[in-house]
Structures are given as structure tokens and as C-alpha cells.
Image (cartoon, rainbow, N blue to C red; front, side, top):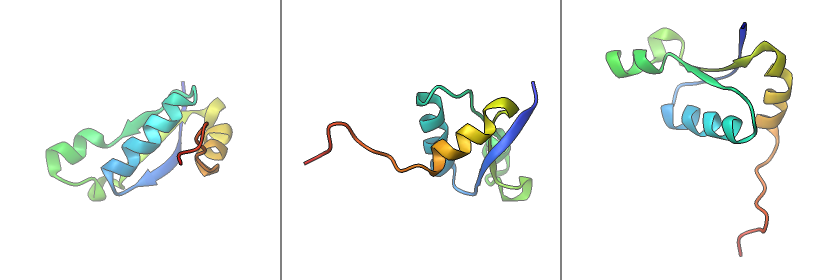
Length: 76
């Protein structure tokens, strides 16, 4: 299965948040370079954290990540 990068992050927390959103949305995400950051202390040398999904899901995943997060019911 060919994977496609839908987001590149320098911050692991941001990458993890997007990973969780994709997973909750029914996508099949993979976070590339996470172990490099744990070993080296940073993922910058490896190009950042690459959030990938199967190629067939890429266009829909990008649109999903670009859409605003809404709460139902909204917080008051």
C-alpha cells in the first residue's frame, strides 16, 4: 500500500493531534519519523514529522484536516 504525506509538522504534539483527528475520522494514518525524534531528540534533521495516509485517502484526508473542528453540542 502506497502512503502519501498529508501534513508535515515540526512539533510532535501538533502531529499527534492531527493523527488523532484522522483516526477518529475513519482514516488510516501513519506518523513517519516519530522514532527518529525519540532517538535523536528532534525530527528536524529527518524533515519533520510526516503524517501519512494511504494514497486512496489522501485528498479526502487533506480536506478533512483543513476543515474547522466543530463540537456538537457547542461548548457554552
